[in-house]
Image 1 (cartoon, rainbow, N blue to C red):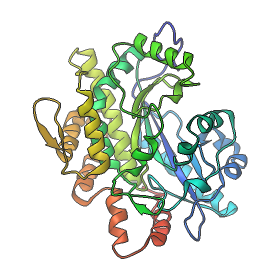
Image 2 (image 1 turned 120 degrees about the vertical axis):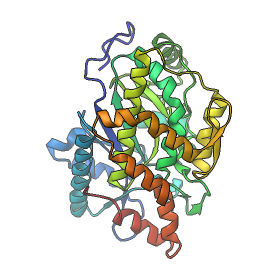
Image 3 (image 1 turned 180 degrees about the horizontal axis):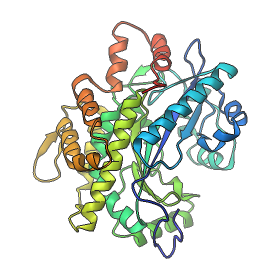
Image 4 (image 1 turned 135 degrees about the horizontal axis):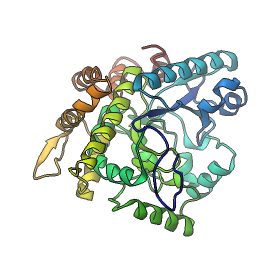
Amino acid sequence: MFKNKNTIKSFDHKPYTVGIEEEYMICDPSTGNLINRANKIMSNLDKSFKDRFSYELIQSEIESNTSICSTVNEAISEILELRKYLRELGEQYNYRIGISGTHPTALPIEQKFIDNDSYNWVKNNLTYYASRNITFSNHFHVAVQDLEEAIHITNNLRKWTAPLLALSVNSPFFEGVHTQFRSSRTMNFGNFPRTHIPSKLNSSEDFISLINALKESNAIDKDRHIWWKIRPHMDYGTIEFRMCDAQRSIARVKMLAAICQALVYQASKDYQNNTLEEDYNYELLLDSLWKACRFGMDAKISNFKNGTISIKNSVEDMISYVKDGLAHFGNSDIIDTVQYVLDYGTEHDLQMQYLEKNNLNDLKIYLMDTVDYNL
């Protein structure tokens, strides 16, 4: 944890440890519609699991959180344990979890907010648009040595926001409408302020000054009300990757977690060697995110040098960049998963393929039935 936000020194933990957060739809077992069970779940957790689950904004959503894990495989084992525990509770309290970046048919007007100080602050600030945040994500935390390093690594890793999103897109529907977007979650959550790719920060002092300025102007109440696609996490001492849609496949969760860990590792090495690239045209960063959100792997984005490449090529460049890091942590096997996604499609594509022979009501059942509970 970060010791002193004013003196800006070091984090007191081992770098490159990993934590994973998953956000789940709480669904009616027979229809797949969202139902309000978050309070029931949170009030009936076994003592050993109380720190592993938390509320999200609406009562039909629940979040799991791993402990600090030494390896990606350890984190994945915990995720599976947490999924299984929710499944067992669901048998008792008549719900099932489903996984998608958005629920296909849920209506904002029907959602009920969690009633606590933190989420009341969000509801009171975002009003109508808070109710449209029926979104579900995977977040990945990777520990770093200190805040100064975290700032510079974040500057660099902004480049990979688009390929990470492109691998994880999983939300074609909202309010019963085929949005034509591969990640409608990105668009819906983008209604919130401070959810964009961050602009470049020159130092940890700049970051602290920004947080203080936002607090003084009542723009935020807590540090974590900065919801950037990738952010230094002040309390955990991590780089947090927040751009990915939730994944049913545990192999895909592992793929994303391993890439994030290896990205931080490689960027940290570059930072220590004074070879870290941090300056990227901001409009081109935003354009690449938009293309990944809206279009497929063949869409053209900037290579941030002097030309364009496809998003697929950007994914391949990212994997090339982290290849040594993946090997260092024993996660080179995920390269096969990346290739599988490139060859056969994302979970967005799987939803669309399923709908070729089925309807939206069937899809809601599919999003529960295809959740992985084992490797």
